Structure formats: structure tokens, C-alpha cells
Image 1 (cartoon, helix red, strand yellow):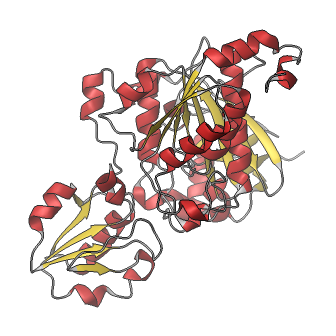
Image 2: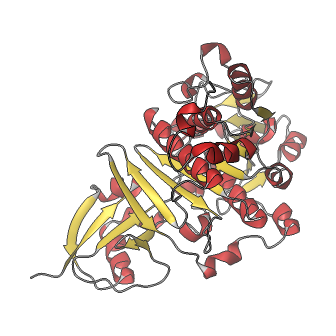
Image 3: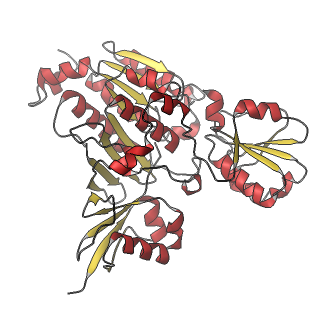
Length: 355
Length: 79
């Protein structure tokens, strides 16, 4: 009796398919709404070695969809919590928790060691960074993403005419186009479905089963339960957007930039702090982890436009948020109101502080 | 027989257009369609999106013929 009996007896999969999964290694980037179902099914299927990369901590608003976590896990790191859960559940796999965000500095070292990468991240800078690193390493990448009631799935860097994310969307959208991460709703079951499709594609690529979604973009609308497949082809004109060397990759700034907004690193920001500097958290109440320090002002982005008067006294203003997108919009808004003040946004937000 | 095509809009594009599916007169090419859409729905001007003609993502200006289905596809980042 073994835990894989019911899949080993499947025609077309068999002991050969199982052996391939056992030999395989997968790097799961992001243990959130997509990462949780991906991990549940890759682990149950018996992938031999899995690493989980996530620098984020579990917050109450995650629990409607990030089904590996419960109330007792609030405030804990996602990668470590997920790995602990699976180590208790299955004894026949190797697990690695990487409690960091993926960056231009660590991507090559992490991705290099694995046969396949899962992109379960939740922001454009990470998606383009992971895509470009996987192109450089020619690593199969299973892509999935969601917006409200819809999802997209594809398989990159696989097959004789491999496509990647830039063949679909050559460059990231402007930050102004992107809805606030704290304000985009989601029914937990949608990332559940998209994450399961991603796990299925990973199993197909690793075991050689069936036809994976390479050169296809699968679209799913949960409101009318419709699937649609679009054909995608390598686009020679977009290849120039991908770094051609690791040196170039390491130098690349993947953060989304709003035109006219000055961005600072946390280190640069720390040096500026002082009496006449307003240090402003524009995250909504409840976003984790909360930051408390003297002189910190909390003005949620959703109410900022009504509270512009609060900044009249400050000579310099430093904005930050979770990922560095909203704070750029805040800086842009304030600069329009106070063209003479020095206004900055902290690059990468709280996520950059944690990593 | 009128020269009409079908549009399918995804994600935020469907919100801006007000529906995820509609039929319109065929403007003849992907570029002409884009111009018409941006004029009719000015909110699309600030949005990134790609087009697919009969379920193939296009990479350059493409002729559109009667009855074809055009998908309007924005990038999603959520996870």
C-alpha cells in the first residue's frame, strides 16, 4: 500500500510518471492564494523536493483563500508555516522554506536548483523578474494570475517554440493602472481553481503526461464558468525587453515607476528623517505587519485626498505602503497639491523592509 | 448580411466597457478597432491591453474579417 496507488494505476501515468515526480524538484514563488492550492496538490502527488519562497506574513485578510493557514498562524511567515505543515503531513518529501522575497540578487541562486518554477506571486515587478530569470535559465515556468472573478494560466519556456510572459505582455503596466492591492476583492475559490490548474500543468510538464499549456494562455471567468484558450507565439520584438546576461539582470530595476515621483530606498529614507519630515504610512488599517515608531503618521490611501491639508507644515514628505505602488500614487497626488515640497516614495514599501 | 464582429473583454476592460461581450460594426483592422475603442471608451487610453483575433494573440496590425471574434486582454497580477 502506498499513498500514490490511485495515480500509479492510471493508464498513461503509471509507475514511470510517479518516478518522474519523485525525482523532480519545484520552486514555488509565493505561498498565498495561488501557492497554497499548488503546494497542497504537488505535495499530495509526490513531487520529491519542493521549496517555498515567501517573505510575507499571514494576516487575517488572507484566510478566505490561503487555505494552509488558520487563526493561530497570524503574524507568522508564510513559507515557514507552509513547510512546517507539510513536513508533519508527509515524511517522504524534502522541503525547504525560504522566508524572503525573490529579488534580482537571490533569484538566480534560488531558481537554479529546481526543475520547474511556479509563479504564484501577487505583483507585476515579481512576475517580470521571475519571468526574466526563468528565460535566462531556460527553466519551465508555470504562470497563473487572478483579477477579481477571472484568472489566467500558462506554461512558459517549454516546447520547441517556447513563449514567456513578455510574449503576452511585453512590459508591465503603469502603476496608475493597477488597482490597490488592499482594495481588490477575491472569492477564495477562484485562486483555488487557478492554483489547481497550475499544479496540474506542473505535474504534466514534470511527468510528461498529456499536453501542457505551452503556447497557450488559458482564461477562466468564474462568474459564467467559461474557459477560453488563446494561442500565443514567440514575439521576436519583445525579446529585447529581457536582460541578456545575469550582470544586466542584477542591475535591472523591476520596481514600477510613476513618472515624476522620486523613489528612495529605506536606507536613504532613514537618513532623511527628522523634525520637518512627515513619515507617512498610506496602508489601510489591518495591513500586516503594522509599523509603529515616533513621528509616524498613518493616512490610509483611501482617505488621503480628503486629508491633504494635514501636510501643509511639512517641508519634506516620505510615503510608504506595502509594495511601493500606492505610495507613488500618494506622492504624485501630494506633489500636485504642493509643487514646492520635497516628496518621496519608499521603493518596494514594507515588503522591501522585511527582505 | 452586415459586416459585424464580436468583442470579448476581460478583467478591468470589461468593467470600463460595461459588458464582457458585444457586437459592433467591423472597423476592418486591429488598429482601426483600437482607435475606435479608445475614442468610444476614453478610460481605456490609460490601460495596457493586448488583442486576440479568433483566439490568436496578435503581434502586429491585423486585418479583421466579418464574424471574427476579438478578445481584449489586460494583464492580471493578483495571486
